[in-house]
Length: 182
Image 1 (cartoon, rainbow, N blue to C red):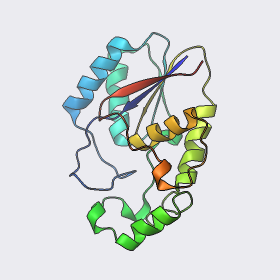
Image 2: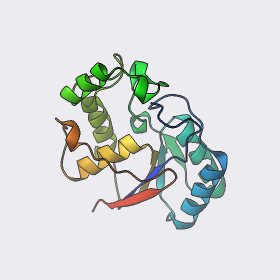
Image 3: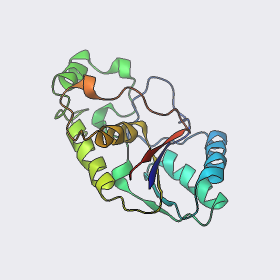
Image 4: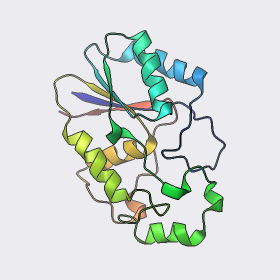
Protein backbone atom coordinates (compact mmCIF):
# COMPACT_ATOMS: atom_id res chain seq x y z
CA UNK A 1 0.00 0.00 0.00
CA UNK A 2 1.25 3.43 -0.92
CA UNK A 3 0.25 6.84 0.33
CA UNK A 4 0.41 9.43 -2.42
CA UNK A 5 0.79 12.98 -1.14
CA UNK A 6 0.06 15.67 -3.72
CA UNK A 7 0.38 19.37 -3.03
CA UNK A 8 -2.15 21.72 -4.58
CA UNK A 9 -1.11 23.84 -7.57
CA UNK A 10 0.36 27.35 -7.30
CA UNK A 11 -2.00 29.50 -5.21
CA UNK A 12 -3.18 32.81 -6.59
CA UNK A 13 -1.69 34.95 -3.84
CA UNK A 14 1.33 37.19 -3.68
CA UNK A 15 4.66 35.92 -2.40
CA UNK A 16 5.41 36.27 1.29
CA UNK A 17 1.79 36.06 2.45
CA UNK A 18 0.72 33.74 5.27
CA UNK A 19 -2.21 31.76 3.87
CA UNK A 20 -2.65 28.50 5.80
CA UNK A 21 -6.45 28.25 5.77
CA UNK A 22 -6.98 31.56 4.01
CA UNK A 23 -9.43 31.06 1.10
CA UNK A 24 -7.12 31.07 -1.90
CA UNK A 25 -7.76 29.59 -5.34
CA UNK A 26 -5.02 27.82 -7.26
CA UNK A 27 -3.92 28.57 -10.81
CA UNK A 28 -6.40 26.74 -13.07
CA UNK A 29 -3.87 25.77 -15.75
CA UNK A 30 -1.39 24.43 -13.20
CA UNK A 31 -4.20 22.53 -11.48
CA UNK A 32 -5.25 20.93 -14.77
CA UNK A 33 -1.66 19.99 -15.59
CA UNK A 34 -1.20 18.34 -12.19
CA UNK A 35 -4.51 16.48 -12.50
CA UNK A 36 -3.60 15.17 -15.98
CA UNK A 37 -0.24 13.90 -14.74
CA UNK A 38 -1.83 12.23 -11.71
CA UNK A 39 -4.62 10.70 -13.79
CA UNK A 40 -2.01 8.86 -15.88
CA UNK A 41 -0.10 7.34 -12.97
CA UNK A 42 -2.64 6.58 -10.24
CA UNK A 43 -3.52 2.91 -10.01
CA UNK A 44 -7.17 1.86 -10.29
CA UNK A 45 -8.86 1.54 -6.92
CA UNK A 46 -6.86 4.36 -5.34
CA UNK A 47 -8.83 6.03 -2.57
CA UNK A 48 -8.72 9.82 -2.77
CA UNK A 49 -9.14 12.22 0.13
CA UNK A 50 -8.82 15.97 -0.19
CA UNK A 51 -8.46 18.95 2.06
CA UNK A 52 -11.66 20.99 1.85
CA UNK A 53 -9.70 24.19 1.16
CA UNK A 54 -10.41 25.69 -2.26
CA UNK A 55 -6.98 25.14 -3.79
CA UNK A 56 -7.16 21.40 -3.02
CA UNK A 57 -10.84 21.03 -3.88
CA UNK A 58 -10.07 22.42 -7.35
CA UNK A 59 -7.53 19.66 -7.99
CA UNK A 60 -9.89 17.02 -6.64
CA UNK A 61 -12.67 18.12 -9.01
CA UNK A 62 -10.45 18.17 -12.08
CA UNK A 63 -8.98 14.77 -11.19
CA UNK A 64 -12.48 13.32 -10.75
CA UNK A 65 -13.47 14.54 -14.23
CA UNK A 66 -10.43 12.81 -15.70
CA UNK A 67 -10.72 9.67 -13.58
CA UNK A 68 -14.37 9.11 -12.63
CA UNK A 69 -13.34 5.69 -11.27
CA UNK A 70 -11.63 7.45 -8.36
CA UNK A 71 -14.18 8.45 -5.74
CA UNK A 72 -13.03 11.35 -3.62
CA UNK A 73 -13.98 12.33 -0.11
CA UNK A 74 -13.22 15.52 1.76
CA UNK A 75 -11.28 15.19 4.99
CA UNK A 76 -10.84 18.30 7.17
CA UNK A 77 -7.84 16.65 8.87
CA UNK A 78 -5.92 17.28 5.62
CA UNK A 79 -6.25 21.09 5.86
CA UNK A 80 -3.23 23.32 6.20
CA UNK A 81 -2.35 24.75 9.59
CA UNK A 82 -4.68 27.46 10.88
CA UNK A 83 -2.53 30.56 11.33
CA UNK A 84 -5.28 32.50 13.11
CA UNK A 85 -4.90 36.27 12.88
CA UNK A 86 -1.77 35.87 10.76
CA UNK A 87 -3.87 34.57 7.84
CA UNK A 88 -3.66 36.84 4.80
CA UNK A 89 -0.89 38.98 6.30
CA UNK A 90 2.60 39.42 4.93
CA UNK A 91 5.09 37.41 6.98
CA UNK A 92 7.25 40.52 7.21
CA UNK A 93 4.37 42.38 8.88
CA UNK A 94 4.03 39.87 11.70
CA UNK A 95 5.71 41.24 14.80
CA UNK A 96 9.10 39.62 15.43
CA UNK A 97 8.06 39.06 19.05
CA UNK A 98 5.10 36.95 17.85
CA UNK A 99 7.32 34.86 15.59
CA UNK A 100 9.82 34.45 18.43
CA UNK A 101 7.06 33.33 20.80
CA UNK A 102 6.16 30.62 18.29
CA UNK A 103 9.78 29.54 17.92
CA UNK A 104 10.24 29.51 21.71
CA UNK A 105 7.23 27.22 22.25
CA UNK A 106 7.00 25.63 18.83
CA UNK A 107 4.92 22.66 19.94
CA UNK A 108 2.25 24.49 21.91
CA UNK A 109 2.05 28.10 20.75
CA UNK A 110 -1.29 28.89 19.08
CA UNK A 111 -0.06 30.90 16.10
CA UNK A 112 -1.80 34.12 15.25
CA UNK A 113 -3.32 34.25 18.72
CA UNK A 114 -6.25 32.00 17.88
CA UNK A 115 -4.79 29.54 15.37
CA UNK A 116 -3.43 26.04 15.81
CA UNK A 117 -0.32 24.86 17.54
CA UNK A 118 2.06 22.44 15.85
CA UNK A 119 0.98 19.80 18.40
CA UNK A 120 -2.62 20.21 17.26
CA UNK A 121 -1.60 19.89 13.62
CA UNK A 122 0.44 16.77 14.35
CA UNK A 123 -2.45 15.18 16.28
CA UNK A 124 -4.93 16.00 13.50
CA UNK A 125 -2.71 14.59 10.74
CA UNK A 126 -1.79 11.56 12.88
CA UNK A 127 -5.49 10.80 13.25
CA UNK A 128 -5.90 10.65 9.46
CA UNK A 129 -2.61 8.76 9.02
CA UNK A 130 -3.53 6.15 11.65
CA UNK A 131 -6.86 5.55 9.92
CA UNK A 132 -5.25 4.54 6.61
CA UNK A 133 -6.18 1.03 5.56
CA UNK A 134 -4.86 -1.22 2.81
CA UNK A 135 -4.50 -2.90 0.51
CA UNK A 136 -5.41 -0.16 -2.00
CA UNK A 137 -3.30 2.96 -2.41
CA UNK A 138 -4.52 6.26 -0.98
CA UNK A 139 -4.02 9.73 -2.44
CA UNK A 140 -4.17 12.80 -0.22
CA UNK A 141 -4.66 16.14 -1.97
CA UNK A 142 -3.24 18.44 0.63
CA UNK A 143 -0.72 21.09 1.71
CA UNK A 144 2.98 21.40 2.52
CA UNK A 145 2.40 21.45 6.29
CA UNK A 146 0.43 18.21 6.21
CA UNK A 147 3.07 16.60 4.00
CA UNK A 148 5.81 17.61 6.44
CA UNK A 149 3.79 16.18 9.33
CA UNK A 150 3.37 12.88 7.48
CA UNK A 151 7.11 12.62 6.90
CA UNK A 152 7.64 13.01 10.64
CA UNK A 153 4.98 10.39 11.37
CA UNK A 154 6.70 7.99 8.98
CA UNK A 155 9.83 8.33 11.14
CA UNK A 156 7.81 7.64 14.30
CA UNK A 157 7.81 11.29 15.44
CA UNK A 158 4.49 12.30 16.97
CA UNK A 159 5.58 15.42 18.84
CA UNK A 160 7.77 18.26 17.61
CA UNK A 161 9.37 20.17 20.46
CA UNK A 162 11.62 22.56 18.51
CA UNK A 163 11.28 24.45 15.24
CA UNK A 164 14.48 22.89 13.91
CA UNK A 165 12.77 19.45 14.01
CA UNK A 166 10.13 20.58 11.48
CA UNK A 167 11.09 19.44 7.97
CA UNK A 168 12.07 22.29 5.66
CA UNK A 169 11.35 20.46 2.41
CA UNK A 170 8.05 19.58 0.79
CA UNK A 171 7.11 18.86 -2.81
CA UNK A 172 6.64 21.93 -4.99
CA UNK A 173 3.18 23.13 -5.98
CA UNK A 174 1.43 20.53 -8.11
CA UNK A 175 4.01 17.84 -7.29
CA UNK A 176 3.74 14.67 -5.25
CA UNK A 177 5.62 11.96 -3.46
CA UNK A 178 4.70 8.40 -2.60
CA UNK A 179 5.34 6.61 0.65
CA UNK A 180 5.39 2.84 1.08
CA UNK A 181 3.21 1.93 4.08
CA UNK A 182 3.73 -1.86 4.06
